[in-house]
Length: 290
Image (cartoon, rainbow, N blue to C red; front, side):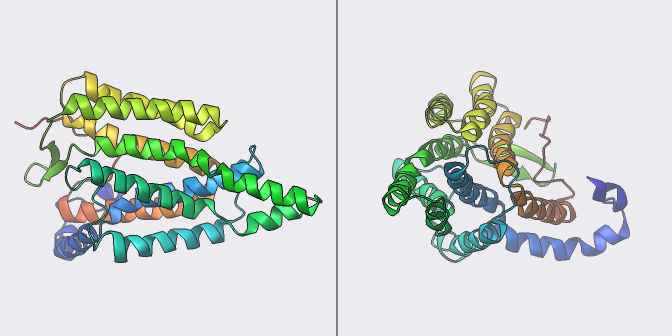
């Protein structure tokens, strides 16, 4: 991180601002800003599936970024003023029971649906010089295409199971430690199975994003399942699948990289001044809890 070189933790500038960023970081943690990575990725995934319906060869498409950003603002408001305050969205906070997991899956589907549904699609279909009957039939197919969101829900559930193993920051050491490994085999086995099912379903729907990204992301939960119970495996299994899917989605909707980057570097900067660590990060802790 470049900021580490410019403003080391031993500098007076860092120490003068640490109290302010600690206060700011507590507010950000309470509001759950880091959860926006998941909320936004699900919403934009729905947008990308909708784009795929009108042009399955779409690539690096900047059109529609205004509507996309409005949708991100909308789902952020829902998260900050409804899901978070009412403790409906509890990913990474504690272990969830079956009912809570299903509720989270339903919320994920609704976020995908918010991204998917686009009132401009009907006008695009109607402008293809088709008859009214053909255009109406095409719009009906568009609505039925909602089922192609299923593999994305499976991916979310797969990643959600990895978050059943909570990790906490040891502030004195500046490293993350795992707090519990109970039912590791059950949770991670189902996580791997769901990810594989998502890949197969993506292939069935001829979705190159979900099928390819899912194939790349599958090994992370598998490694955490097979190898010894180390926190670094959880770190990789929690962060990298989300990062992989966000990047694959951005190949079709590149404007998504901008809000992702802003959120990423804001959180890194706040956490650096708060704890002296870089988080969120692509790195992992190699030290184990003693």
